[in-house]
Image 1 (cartoon, rainbow, N blue to C red):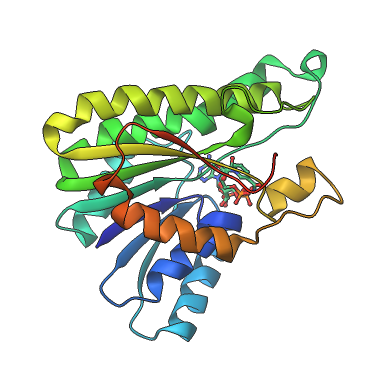
Image 2: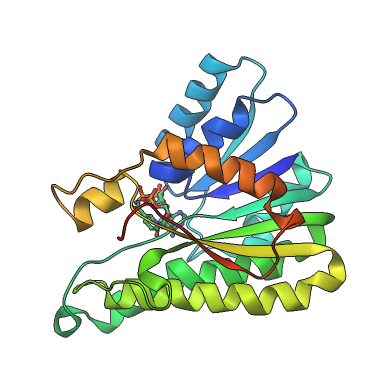
Length: 234
Ligand SMILES: NC(=O)c1ccc[n+]([C@@H]2O[C@H](COP(=O)([O-])OP(=O)(O)OC[C@H]3O[C@@H](n4cnc5c(N)ncnc54)[C@H](OP(=O)(O)O)[C@@H]3O)[C@@H](O)[C@H]2O)c1
């Protein structure tokens, strides 16, 4: 399958690319801003599977023109796109009174606007039967326990969830399914910074295993769904 994973330089995205790269029949474009970490990811994949096909692309998804900088790269490597995992994300943990307008823009640009841009600009290359998986959070899941400091982050993840529902309706005519996973705590840098000392029940490799499976088969059972994937909250 032809796969794009955003936010691939660390945490869940890094582990997800590694999981897909174990299988020789997958080709993965791995996107984030940090070229060095993406090269490290490619090397780790090749160590595990010398036939791994990982194509790193250093790109700031917020500021880039994706039609100019991503679409040609995708066309160069893929005939069409089967899976897009919108995993790149930003969390700022601050009380609402401490958050600036710029913080608002950074959070919503990273967690919502980039997904809008990716789906809009990659639309011509999605295959019939393709699957877009948006990575949301339990913080953005209606009725879940909420935490002080995460207001904008959680609101952006809630927006991503509703965007998923709407996208699925629009894209079903083209054979493209869209689902949203509201994930619980996974032991990554983002979690460590937001909740220092907290020990998550899952490591990135464990969640990546589920994500790999869901991205390939989940759209045979779900479309336009917001699914909580959580052993705990957060
Ligand atoms: N960890 C958890 O407990 C948890 C819980 C619920 C939801 N989530 C969600 O799961 C996803 C992955 O989280 P994580 O914990 O693995 O976070 P992480 O370790 O902080 O990784 C975030 C990734 O996003 C990339 N990124 C951020 N801004 C970007 C931009 N403008 N352009 C391109 N890439 C960008 C970062 O790469 P660069 O810095 O190299 O650009 C990095 O690879 C996020 O959407 C997060 O909100 C995580």
